[in-house]
Image (tube, rainbow, N blue to C red; front, side, top):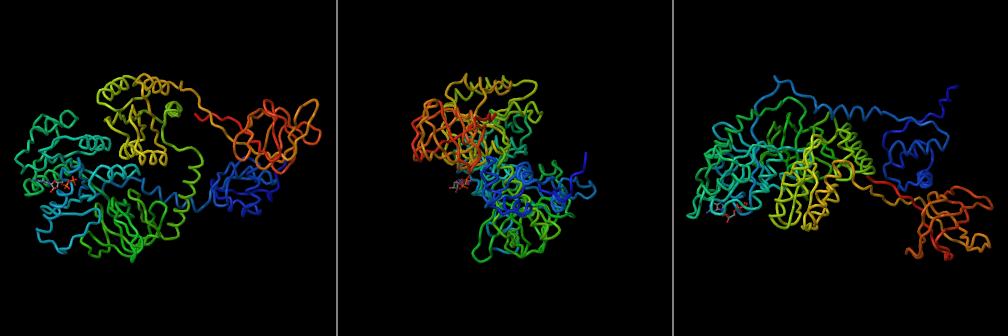
Length: 591
Ligand code: GDP
């Protein structure tokens, strides 16, 4: 075997845009697009394609492609890996706990956050003007506590959906006069799914109708057993209005924090999470970030999701300018190029150039991933995931029209658990599928089963964008059957129509032997004999048929590429007219 001449060797990255491929192959982007089209791939100039696709074009040009493991991405990858490296235990120092307040609407989350914040101001802290930046810190007995200032589990789970576990302790607020309500249960399930310790704040005890004991009892029914009932959850009676019990609540927080032995290494490049971000007319993109590890400093080059920048200035929750921020400290930063999203990780890297490389690489990676299927679990792909050993637990969020069916389904589904896959229902409730359900599914890599429940339009949109599967049913045994089939790999195969190409009818001939022959010009893709087709007139389907005959001049051919003329004979349809378009397709299995 002779070695191939090296001049034909060409290195192509794992993912690249059409334009970049053109540059590498020394042909115009238009030429790349045309060639992709002939291979059945529709792409525009800025679209990212993967190596395998790019390699086909390179081979067509007589080149010898090789996947490039570029140096820059290696550097970037290294920077990313750094985070995964466990800190030396000796480098870990105690850090303040980060607390989020969850609970039903109107039970006093905001009032409680404000009341706690005031204890700091009352204690004579500097500043006076407090500004809401999405998080704040207070000091008690010389110990700091960080509160996330956006109450509610939606924000909490939105962060978790992005892989950011910020909260160390969840405060579950329950109004003593109102008791456990639907969102209380939701909050409990979100906190349990996140596996964070819960402290119950029984609020509004100043009201004459307050009944803390009833609250404790109700909580027991939802897996929250307080100490008085033999459990290990601390419940503190408080009043955001009078301030009663706040000191006890803070003490309870410190106690739970101590048990958790929360630590972080302040002496490493900072890693933080975006809590809130917005575009400020005067200052550009600003973001409140919570440092999780390391120390963030003014002047640091940072990456946050798909944006980067250099920290121009930082402010604490009092609006005071600061130069650095250690673990569990919330700060407002200026200097990012774009507004990042809440929950996104922000990381300090060596310099701005590396920051840009990483961002670039992420964008490409995402685009390439978007081209292939989404990674989220769904019933159709479930069995493959189980077989591949990737999935040990099927997480289900169950929404039903009435309590009775929710409970019946829950029990029946749980019995489907088997040694390979455990079925875990992390939330079951009545009502429509909401945004918060989708976020919970996203954060937990679960699926949603809607039984006689509709889906809120915004939840539907979110599910589509994030790849969360919502399956609607109205018959219980069908739910069980589908889940069981998915678990055993028996789910009916699903097919999707994949278009191979289009041919325009330019002339119609009559043949005594073959009937009507459509003289066509192939507009795009490659059309194949034997393919199923649809005939379109003014974009509307007027007929269907299988391609029985395909001819170039007098010869029978198997396929014809874009840009060529051919004769087409369909079985099942022959009423084509000039200007009709015949769409050739094939069915591809999608599960
Ligand atoms: P959120 O929706 O959970 O954030 O609840 P808010 O903090 O907005 O409180 C809802 C209502 O309950 C407001 O009218 C508050 O003034 C009132 N509230 C909050 N905490 C207390 C409390 O401890 N005692 C009494 N009496 N009212 C309270």
